[in-house]
Length: 261
Image (cartoon, rainbow, N blue to C red):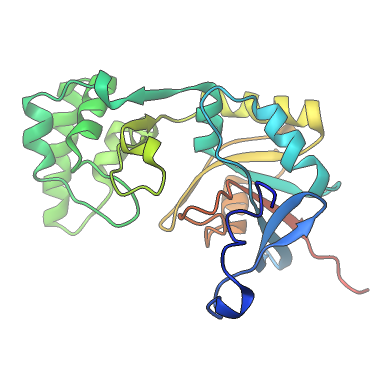
């Protein structure tokens, strides 16, 4: 049994629920078909690509060569989870290095929680935001958020504190991966530069995304993708084909469906 097949080989096909997407193999790479999505009148076929668990300090070029080069052809592009780039860069913060103070404990009691990841109701995450942006800005953002909520407006807090705070991922006790219980992953450094480096070294056009079931943010893209707007690239994976579970699919290959004509 190979490393890539271990995640799904334990269940016999006859036991799988009807709505479970089965992986396919292209050489040694496992892909989960994600269906066709039409964007601007053009159909695109998507496939989530399974990898091993990406550890801190790994070489993202080596990861791309292993999993993307064998399954990509000219005209394809790949969306890359921001988390694995940050893990390769070791742009992370350990919980033991965050000293939770009074304001983080107090303000987190009033924060809104959600089912799509850890929010500011986690004191450690809020303290990290305070450490990154300073207490005055966080207090101002909290005050504006409270007023905006009275009028039914959401997202004000993150608009004020910025994408750097919104992109903090981790300190999530319910994560399938134990390492994320006590580790926060920050947004990747120089995402455009990373995409350019990957394309020059491997020929694979990439865009780094911060995607979940609620939203898709484009953080960086290869030079060959400059012709495409962020809105277009985000719309190609708006349904989050990479998923939020533990199947190790941080890459999504996007391929234009050629017409029969």
